[in-house]
Image: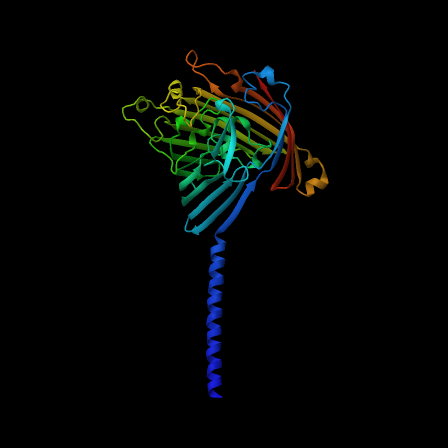
Length: 410
């Protein structure tokens, strides 16, 4: 009997200890999960393009003006956010983006090489780590963030989620001439007061070897290597003001050198004596009040030594992976869109917090403003675009979009 009682007591003690350990593990898991937040967004689109898909449709427009339309399904972006609050003002943020459904080898019809078919591995274009940073909050008006961060130059880069623009795809002008979403590895100081927010960043420079006529500096943030070359450096600044209820006003800018910012530096070559200074200035605003949303921006950029970029060593060789086009000394993108929620006038939809915006958009952009008398003219890079459509919000986190748009070219 005594032996049996001792065994029972020992088992009870073991069960108590195990329960305490499980309870501790459960609390630890709860503590870990309390600091973890998960988010993201995604887009699914269907488009029908009522123009030719031939690569010569601009250079010989008359020949292809009666070509049939073409359509496509696409998943432009599917994004996962994983953030963690460590406490004591420390946090980590990550953003993983899947573009066009995944990674792999793809075929492309290369517009810059007379429509030649190319097979290429989409490094940095299909699955991207767009953000990976560690941040320390010292004061609400002083935060230090280091790692892979978004460069908030222009309206598109600072507000690129689908709920922040009316069109099905991201606004075309800025999306053409600037990297989108623009992300670099660097250091950022940022802060917020009652009416102001600022962001100041130190970044690696762009790579002029990737600049082109049709996209200006858009591909300059890409790197074909396992690292980002940083022979040259850059800075970015953004300031937003919220003094007027419902209105945000923002200015942003960028400056950095881009020539000789790739592998294979030649200390005695011509490129070492050039800068390729990229200067960008942008103004944007968002008004959201009285059932109306209006957004607009003007972005202008200048490229120093633009004529010399065309002839940089390696750009014109037959095996070059870089664009062989001339690059404009400047580029511009302007746009404005406005929408009104007419569901706000219907009691039932208003009670369900549903919205239906009827919107219109106009934009003008030019990816190639040449240095006159030094570079050839390509008038088709000047584009006016108009769009009209609907945005339906069944709940605040979901939007179903439809639009009809038309470009006007010379």
